[in-house]
Length: 103
Image (cartoon, rainbow, N blue to C red; front, top):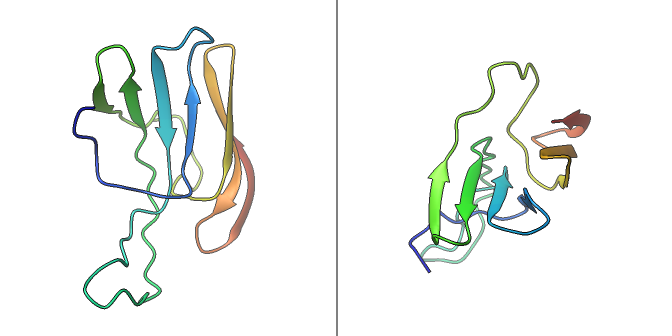
């Protein structure tokens, strides 16, 4: 497998086609508390960076966010599905509970 972007957790991932090929990864927490002491400092680093993984070419691409999104995009712990070539995200957390839907 190819070298991917930095690790993250509580993100979402969804295949963009029922036949596979491209997987869209969104959000998550990218703060790493697994350092020397293995004690959490409570730091949070939520990301809004969408990633595209090509399963056929085994390659990663960092995508730009659409300019028409006018909401808090950084989040983790949300859910996602793909429907008719669009990914829909619901809720999540970014310091507060979110109840929005992003397409």
